[in-house]
Length: 162
Image (cartoon, rainbow, N blue to C red; front, side):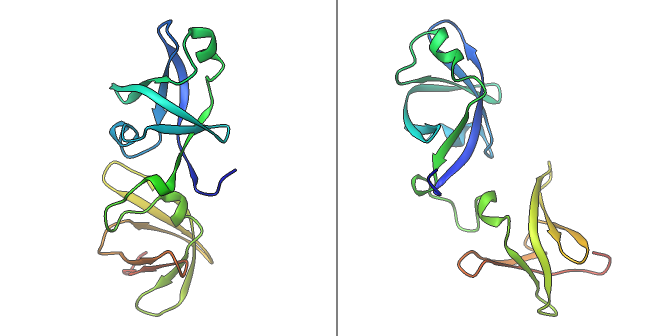
C-alpha cells in the first residue's frame, strides 16, 4: 500500500437505503475529514460525492455506492487519506510520523528510548517513551521542545519524577 496513505477512519455502518455510509473519523475532528474530495479504501481512490457531520461521525455518499447492498459491502472497511493532500499548521504532526522517533533528553543529550505510543487524552496528548523504563510525557511545549522528523528525533525536557 502507498506509504503516504494514513488511516483516517472506519466505515462503521450504513445510513438509510440510498447507499450512504457512516464513517467514524480517527482525526482530531470530523470536520477535518470533510476537507477531502476523495478517500482510499483497499488502496483505491474513492470520490466523496457528499458528506455531512452527524454527531461525531460523517455521513457520506461515495462514488459508485448507490444502494444499501453496496454500502453494506464497505462496512468495517478502513478509510485512508493521502498525507500529501493535507496541510498541517506549524507544530502539528501526524501521529503515525511520531511513533518510532528517538527521544532525546534536552538536559543530558541522552537517548531516553523511542516513542512507542501516543495517548489521546482530553487535556492533551501524551507521548509514551519506551526505553530502559517507560516514561509518559505530556505533549505540551514545556516538555516537548522540538521534533525533527528528518532526523527522526524528538527532544524532551524532563522534570524530576518523570
